[in-house]
Length: 577
Image 1 (cartoon, rainbow, N blue to C red):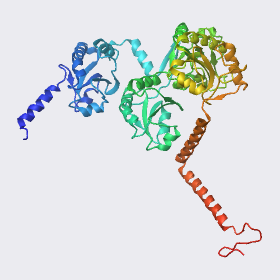
Image 2 (image 1 turned 90 degrees about the horizontal axis):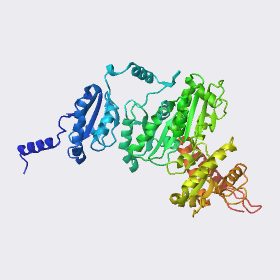
Image 3 (image 1 turned 120 degrees about the horizontal axis):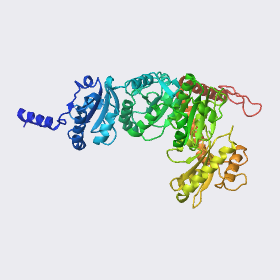
Image 4 (image 1 turned 90 degrees about the vertical axis):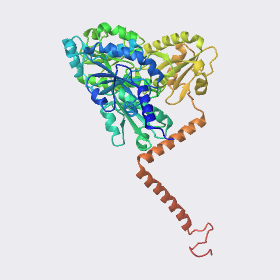
């Protein structure tokens, strides 16, 4: 039996009533959404009336609405979108759960609110993003805003330096790149790229978060993607070995992102990548910032030099803010660190929270490139080789030697302190200058014991075990020049390092012979595959040439009319005689 029109109307009315928004809050629809948020700051709650969290949050939302209705001069507007009735609009706005609150400014998405849905936290969040009227701004504030818009960074009270900034991600969208557009796109501004395959389950799971990241990074950082099923040669050239793989490109270099694929860690990485790479500092604040950072760089300028500031800003982009780079033109700092005033610029590296003396100095007389120097000095003298730091240390671009002390849990503090002292003594020796750099680390043997045993044959009981590793070559050394196992003291460790430098001690492989053969074989296959994908026509010609050579060799054997027995001739079509 078909339902009556009256029952259908009643059902529709009940659903509409259940889907009603919070009292007193403006409700937007696809018809008026863009027009409404086109002017000013808008904080939009995307909700579903069937969502328990939304119903629990409703009283708090109403309090926030009331709070800002009393303060219209702040320029904050609040509204809602009912996703049960306007699902397409919510999907377009990147909504992945309820309630989700997005902030928009003059029609453009700015960010998603990701903190606790507490009244005080929400009010503080919105107050920090308020857009007061022009009359409420002081003249000094207006000047500062104009300077920032022009890309001018104050270095100290006496000077200004202008740093050029490029517009990025104007639409807040993921850009799909092709073979034709990839190189030019990543060259024009820093870009975070996802390499994926449409059939990949992990890629499908990442897709909504990637869209959200693009929205969050609008006007801050380019977010792009490459379909590796469609552009196989491009992905092969970029070293893609699995899906999804994420790379950050900046000024001709790239860094692989190996962190979590969830929205929050991705945004944290992108925010750090998009943050200004250089911060102004005064002589008075230097000790403070060095004490706050295990490693810090300071660019000293004897006069305003836009070219070198832009150069350092670009080359330090891939550091992603770690370590931070500070800039100053203070004459006091030139005097404090005995930098000749004839030097137009100098970069100092400070490590281990010690502002007394820089561990390294870079200027125009150094033969190394600036980016090489920045990466070679980015790590503290000693550190824990944890999961988060593993890639930065073991796969560092300058391929350092890594001293690893596998440490039982009960002596980690003592080992860390002792290793730090040993590392500082090594820096004072300066034996590493012009040679392979050395990084001193310790590892939690309880957590990494099986890995240490498989890689370096180390079995830790109650005492730390020490090896020197060259992860780039997958080799290691576990004995010093006396032939004894390396001990956790300066004499033994320095002896081992000098032995490595002088090729006086024999290395061991981190892989067994079968693993090495398989790696070489796999590398050969990968190289061959890459060549075929990159140069298909040449590959076809080479294959045809090889087949032609084989055919000619076989034909030559068949046409040979000389019998193996002396004095006999074989005539084609005839017989032996």
